[in-house]
Length: 284
Ligand SMILES: Nc1nc2c(ncn2[C@@H]2O[C@H](COP(=O)(O)OP(=O)(O)O)[C@@H](O)[C@H]2O)c(=O)[nH]1
Ligand SMILES: [Mg+2]
Image (cartoon, rainbow, N blue to C red; front, side):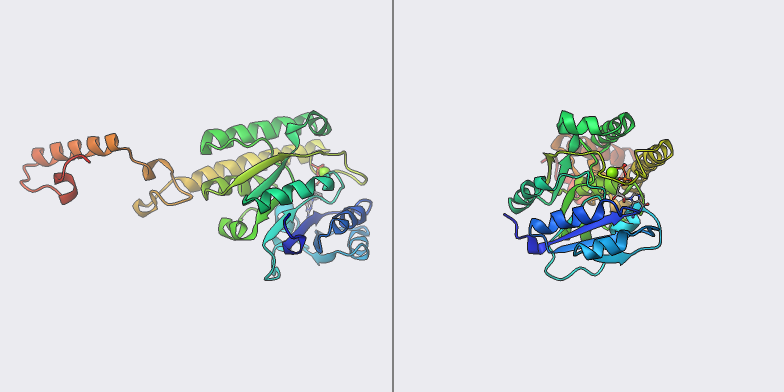
């Protein structure tokens, strides 16, 4: 199993005084030493309770789920090789973590908890959440060709991949950006069925309210549109680069032959007597 000492846990938290201590204690009892709670301007006792339970607490006054996650990954110890994100409300099943660690140790770069694989976990999610996740993963499949099943909060990512991704989103587009960029970078991605519970206390800020659900859904879809736009090559030198269009990088022999034929035809039409060297060599 992966040595938990190389794992940094990051927990974004906003007014989670009822649940944060149990989450931190649960993680520490699994042997995870680095537990960082990012307090995003809580007006309750969240920071004090997190600290008392043994977490390092960082304050991030600028609101946003992604903002808190991003701040939590600043100034990591040099030994940290893995970053684990989980929620502060007790809805993630920590007993699933050893399986996630085992996948990481087996070579994965990104290990995601898939709540939608289990009917009991799916039942805990709201219909809007289930629909939004199904729609988002279908759009990723259409746009990027990778079949995800969920955009869950429980996620373990290799530090080197996280740094290569260069996360830009600072809100609810955080999870989808990470997943799309991981595909673009050719990461080894594993989704594992995980349990999911109703929050153990406090109030939901996202899926439990209509406003939060609409906001999160809109942001997730607009993030997807932005990621898709970023991928479109606008400069010739960007063609074929990772993170840009995939198609131009893969040119079949048949396509090459067609291009040469059309170039030959064009050169002849223009009355040139010399063809570019790679065209003149004929089909390969
Ligand atoms: N830092 C930060 N965390 C947030 C924000 N909104 C929600 N969270 C945290 O993100 C996690 C998921 O939020 P939650 O309210 O449980 O959303 P739900 O599971 O969709 O109901 C919890 O740990 C929250 O404390 C926010 O604006 N900033
Ligand atoms: Mg929750």
